[in-house]
Image (cartoon, rainbow, N blue to C red; front, side, top):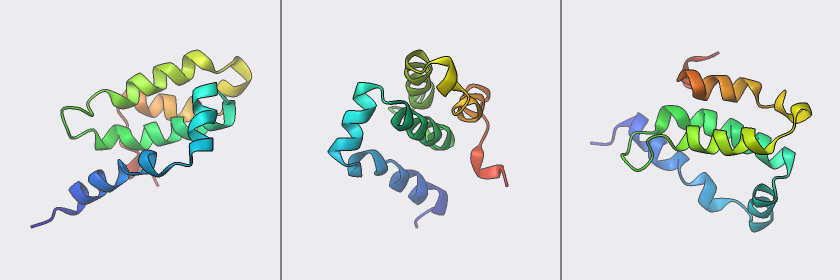
Length: 94
């Protein structure tokens, strides 16, 4: 029997695989807008780290993002950083 939360967790991990190559390149280049989008994805992913290989993924990604963004752009990721660092399940926020 399929568990709805588990199906969502499995499906959400597909997003990175479906990203256009151009967007992945922007992330690799440290483009601020791409990193902001990735930070929000990491906040969402924090609550879906249900597999051994996914544990800590959001924190690692967020550390990389924070290290690459300047102070002006940091304001755009303050909320997802807070969610990841404090283990906030964004699904419960409304």
